[in-house]
Length: 131
Ligand SMILES: [Zn+2]
Image (cartoon, rainbow, N blue to C red):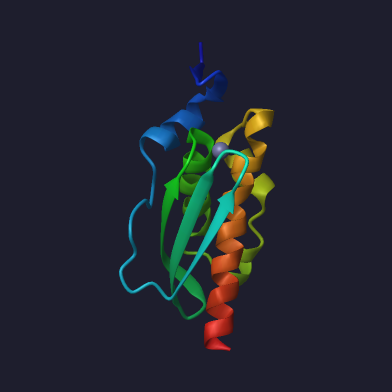
């Protein structure tokens, strides 16, 4: 058996691993930009903070209150964005995040959209600040 049932939802091992051991979770001191996005359908709220140097995301952290899918995708999205240029990070799509995790249950797809949205929003905030 490689799926874990939580609240009647089957998550694959990779999702559960990121949910149990999220990467880059916490507060980022002196972040250059941050963005918060929410998802009314399951009440997920995600905040992403980035630190940028020479157009590269040198550090990234997230704080997510939400379901397992929201936390796992936050963790994966921050992993994908770390050490990338702003231009590269901006191109990380919702699909990239869910593909990197394996597979998300269809009813949890809306949760997986949060992470890439928050990331793009944080980059937008940063660009506006530094324009
Ligand atoms: Zn959710």
